[in-house]
Image: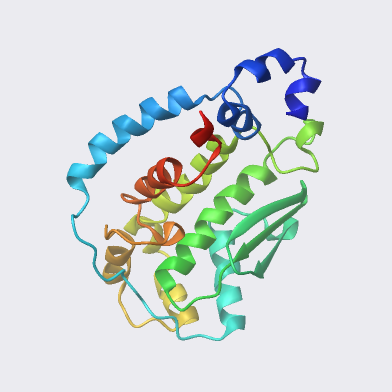
Length: 231
């Protein structure tokens, strides 16, 4: 609300749905009407092609020490052109990327034993980090802050790296033998990439496949308590 008032939009705030007011801080110019239309179209297209029953989430076991896992994460980030000289990497309960400054981008990932989830998280967060590392230093608003108001653009970059690049076999063919050795994997590149591309309904959004991920977002928006409930 304060940010709206500072821009002389107090009257707009009074007229607007509370959800739209809060949405403005995350994605400037986007409204719930636009989201409703987009998600309706998306849902109508996705539901007929999503498997009707769940199943076992693909799992490729990591057999490596924490040190080797960290080295593999750094290797993957370097492979997609994240500059490790301007970043840092650590383990945390949930994957995230945080910008301290243009030359200090922090990436964290969750430690688990599933190589498919591990590599997807690293590549996804690397996409966020690459965007932040390439913000021009003359854009002072973003020089020492994670870019705000452009969350959709931010997520589009991370999911481009994760899904368009990271689930493509041609991404893996040049490096898979090294990744396999680092993580102690026991499957070949074809089985690995097949696991990355399986579509199976699951309960955990951050571990969802490319097809069903959007349905997690739609379900969260329309079934969870939110400011929309007061509208």
